[in-house]
Amino acid sequence: MRRYPKYKVAAAHVAPVLGDIGQTVDKVCHVIRDASSRGVKLLAFSEAFIPGYPTWCRVTAPIDSHGLFSYLAANAIYVDGPEIDQIRSTAAQHDIFVSIGFSEATSVSVGCIWNSNILISNTGTVLNHHRKLVPTFAEKLVWANGDGAGLRVSDTELGKIGMLICGENTNPLARYCLMAQGEQVHISSYPAVVADRTASGEPGYDLEEAIRIRAAAHSFEAKAFNIVASTPYDDTAKAFLAQYLDDTTMQMLADSPKAVSMVLDPSGKIISDTLCETEGLCVADIDVSKCVEPKRVHDVVGYYNRFDVFDLRVNRTRQVPISFTGQSDFDRTISSDNED
Image 1 (tube, one colour):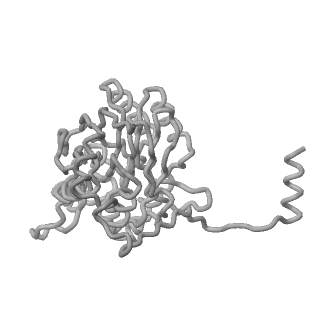
Image 2 (tube, one colour; image 1 turned 90 degrees about the vertical axis):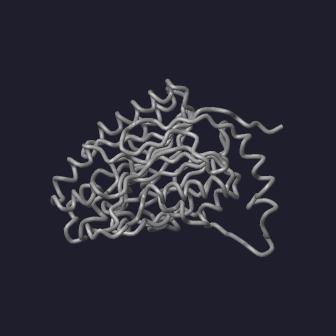
Image 3 (cartoon, one colour; image 1 turned 45 degrees about the vertical axis):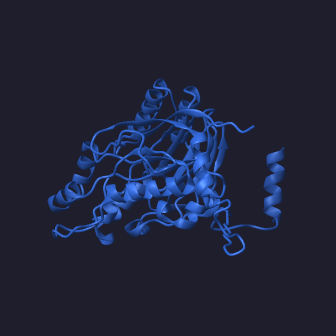
């Protein structure tokens, strides 16, 4: 008989300490401990939480932002680095699953970084490692394209958990890929603020409304719970950006739509607090059995589809810049020396 667990989840609507990775990681661990003390079993942080989302990429010309890009590249972290290890250890100590976004570094290039997200189990194991498929808009000048290796749903004691980053939650095929793996709990991660237009007085992109629409749409179509984790635009972000941006640009950011965090049920209904300006946890009780009945009405990965008409294929190969075949005499010598 299938198990349908009941437990608490939370979206961490908190901000990184921009300009200080050590303090940011310490803050993550503090929030993990706090959430665990409140009975939370699954905790989600926002997009690119470490070392922080590059808000500047949308409001500065490429020719004016080389220094900021260099800063971000220098502060990107490795998926197997000490920062992630510290978070994994804290998750294990406090018996909690954690999802977190970060700018990911690679040893093969000092200038290639990905917008990545990992899901960590309550034993500290990395269950999934996803790189954003396509950076959105101006992000293309910051992050490299990801791949399909992380388009996975993790089958856990809490149910089947999937995750997408920001604009990926508007990608129907990426979303369907997770639905078709039986996703029951979805994690959506977003940044703090999106400046869409200059101060022209014309209406621009409403980030809060866009998040609500995307989150409700996926919950309703997947018949899944959705944990939406964003970041408040706090004083540390303003102080950091003020070092590089002029007053007009800073005012534009202040006037731009801000992100929200929340939890939704399989009908698309919000079942937690909704946070925007202030830090906190959006906590909700979920019951995975609530995913079952709606499937009887409308199951897009079951009876309500035509698999003879539609065919989705997903390439999960992890993309690498180079591969080697064969072995040279030098390789064999090095290998022999290492064995000795």
